Length: 445
Image (cartoon, rainbow, N blue to C red):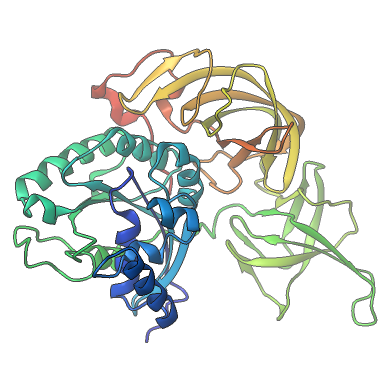
């Protein structure tokens, strides 16, 4: 088998309720032989208990008892599988409107999203909402899986109408035509998921798995300016490590090497990197995505939540910034709300001082100066923080440009936030019609 460790695709599923997302994921796992024998036995037993003659493949993903009992996906279920060509990390996300916040979680690191629709129902309100969220999060590629084509007699015309409607919507959200692919599938039967279907001779494109195996994956930007959020300060004083002080975390962007000149933010103190440590020894360099411990040349004050950045191109710590937020709470957001903002490992007091616009993901218009943002709505806000934060624009760096809005009273998550323009229409002062909707957003790399 080929080495797949260097070729990883992170993907997520999304779509409306009952469109078969979990069954599709189960079919991928089943047909690629990525299911352990005991797990498959458990699914067979559970399927028999439900009175089914064939295994319910959705049970391979819906792991919570409440999910199995209700027949819906509630939590984000992560699954890992591989083929000779590529390794995959797949996040199966909920379809229900009230669980849109979980979709945001699952799609936040995705390089591709598979958005399902039921061939009998076509593109729905939740489909358009999820497409807008995926565009907002900068997921660069979309696959529209038109599921249950067996229930419309594998009708080509039905597929073409749905595919065109969705492609037009995705294009209006800023997706280039080459980044959106529609595939007719039946997750239950297996048509065009892993094996090509004889029932759709009119479809000449790849199966879903073929596309996932071959779609170009943009690597982490190793040549970007270094960003290293400090997760933990390691202090030891042993015979082997006398007065050891290291700063543990994951390289969020760029590459770090011994000898690099860095700046610690928000303090602004400068030093150089002495060593890049791992449990297996020192490294000559560490690229984005690698978890390491940095040892610095100077003994300076650094705490959890600080950011180590390349000295030549550091982010500017700010106490006010514009952002796009996806509101995830039943409690409405109103201007002046006092909250907590969690950026990386640092949490600070903050206030949403202005609510500039609300985005209508169905009509692709911006409503200026709304009185509030309600559950699952997307809006443009101005955030003031009590302590300066070294933030990047989300379009430049997804990891250091993202933050969470937290309720100071009970610690619950209120919103997912993205620093910078995000949906461009939200910076405008009035609605945008469909003819100009293509300028609304440019999905990030």
